[in-house]
Length: 246
Image 1 (cartoon, helix red, strand yellow):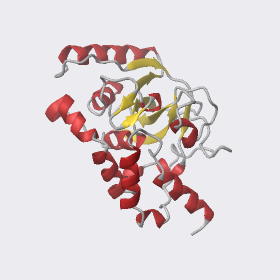
Image 2 (tube, one colour):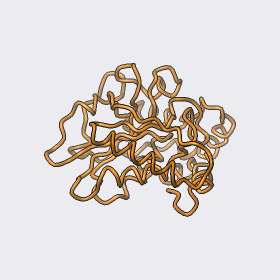
Image 3 (tube, helix red, strand yellow):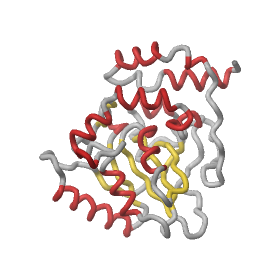
Image 4 (spheres, helix red, strand yellow):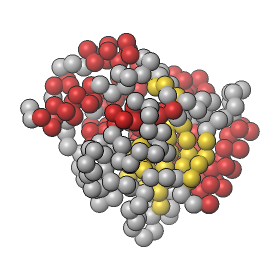
């Protein structure tokens, strides 16, 4: 195995060890020790997802890239970006999802910097979609059912503002739609706690390292093990009932 694959697997196996659920992560590490020795498969590149690799290992600023005519983008944060790509990938009209870091102050941050909690970023997903086939409002519906909107400094087992839920709007129209959607959720929510998700202007979105991209498809066993052991599905069902995302 070459050094690059060693580094990628080290990064994968150490994901989340810095959180308060350290013992759980250690158990996960042991459970998958043998599989972590295997090289990660390369992600298929698409025109939209192809972005220049920066010196820190993250990719160049995605929000600065022009989109093809007729397409739009949305940026959401809802805890672990592995778990936020998958729900949007299932939406007809979504062309790509990219895991990354946003809402912070450090240029071109690495996963290690963001997960340490000192850059101000949160893990997020950038969604490129065709407005003729789906809408920003539809994406908001998917978003709400896949987050715990009652906390602003964590999501499920991942603790810290680097996992905070947040909606980042690209223009005034998205801002109005997000505010309207939040008000509707507050009116109809099936739980008592307040909805505290912030709605803020989009800033730089820095795509995460390649081994994080499309993680649920490339590593389904490890993905589902992490998702369930983190309590994500249990909490979503507790909050949203049968409407919970998965």
